[in-house]
Image (cartoon, rainbow, N blue to C red; front, side):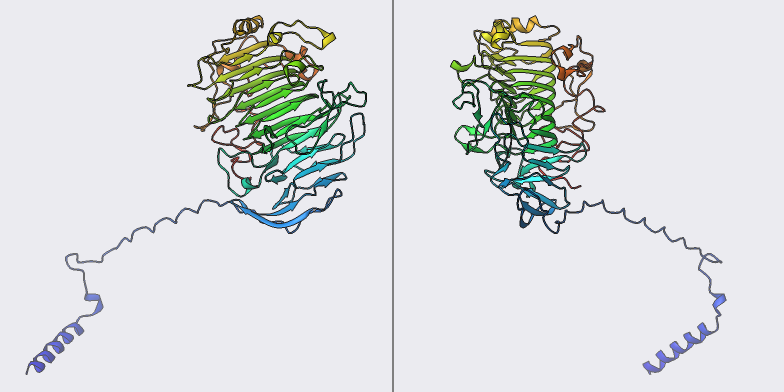
Length: 533
């Protein structure tokens, strides 16, 4: 009975629906059609940020005329994989290291370019040319040695510098305090060096010396002040300075007896465990030198070097450093009157001291050394240095009061011209403090109570400021440095300091950046990494 009732109900319902056509269905309460507005589709997701392609290894190593390059397969790091090509220990004929994508060259212990041609030679035996963009890695006791009478032509460009660095740098195993991971670059020449050394030249009274820190005797010095050891231009040297003997470390760049025929410009030293660069004797001219993070002296000059430097930028690490500039003439007090005497002139420098250790900014140690600083800015950022420390320390009375005397190669007292001191203490508290200050006062345009207005690059909020501000670019008077040396013929500028503006930032492009200082907005990137293009 229940089944019969259910059947009748379903049947009546079906008949009722069958009596209504499709046109007779209306929406309740409207009496008409309903328009449904569907929501707009969501916008497509933004494209992912572009990814930097990883480096892929070159298929093989090139060949060179001066020896056999060993293919050590590949080496990997955060920026990709590279073909690893080890140079011969001795490069015996003129050769070129080509820039090949996905390839790095590796030093092989003491990697020699040519053999020593001797004190009196005039020939050029072997030339090693390194193309722009080449990366040379090294590890442990590896270093590059250019012997006397041979040449290094390491010529990068502003957009494609040459990089000498450690294997660990490529593998991503470095940090802001890394250093001492390989030796460095040694460039030896045949220009005069200070006399009185143990190793005489062919005439007995001449002098040749051995490179500091080298495990084997590498001699430098000669009689040709115009000697040519090649060209180093647009080059970075990172994480160098391994100690090869007690108290004898290599540094990023070591020159010995290098002559004025050599070209050195646009060189950056980064995190050397010893000096940023050290110049032993010779007659060197250097333009646009940068030292960042050196653990000893940023610029060290001695053994009778006649050096002129133009546009110098130094920024110390806050954790470790000694002086910004340290100068000697000949080693030891008894030898300080040896000739030639060290005579160094520096123009348009910005020197930034930032370490609580060390001796401050400038230390002139040997009484026979001559020194001049022009159109420059000294900045001491230290807040807890000892009260008796200062921006300038002179160790010997002769450096202050010895009169010019060409017969003994003496240029006279040190001189500062148009130099601004931004230092909590300007002069070290020694018995020569008053005389040192008086000699600074004898120069024209020196400001001992200066306040710097240095700026960082646009948008950069960390690291040292190094770009001139209004005070540096309106400083008066500007010293005419053209009379100091022919090297400065076109170097008298309308400002003090190294870098006048962001638009005229000569460090842009070929340098690398770190937490210590950002040198460029469009350069090779972090010093802790390899460039990716």
